[in-house]
Image (cartoon, rainbow, N blue to C red; front, side):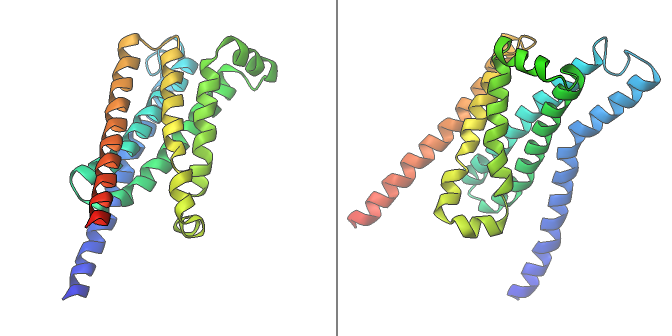
Length: 217
């Protein structure tokens, strides 16, 4: 009976992963369609500044996917369904891919692969440093996202993956300092991030109280 239940749940789990993958791919599909329209009819797909539009689209969706990845953990705890954690890796990898595309589009479309332009932007536009900090924080998380790395690192895996909080803060600073972002937009993303962090703080406090109670008993 137990094996039959597992067999029933496994196809459903795989189907959910496929559906989630398709949902996470929508922002990229929208961008590809906008580029297609832009090539056929200039300014209709991406507006007057297509290069900026591509970079901005990839950037804002990088933040949204990162927030969504953090939300999965919170949702799993709030609903008491730890199975949801299994979808976090996919969301995290999509986030990393989107960030890489965002950085690559900046280098190719805005900086024109000019090292002098990139170095100049680092000194004149500090939000780029914040964005690079977010990228560098996500790289080790993407590399060690497999089960094999989790087994090798053991408890250190959880410590390492706290870098996601550094990445999130750096990403929000990147958005806040960005000249094209409005204050309302950056404030909204900041408020969502505070809520996600607050849930984690409350959960940590509750977990510590429970462990102290168990020890006392």
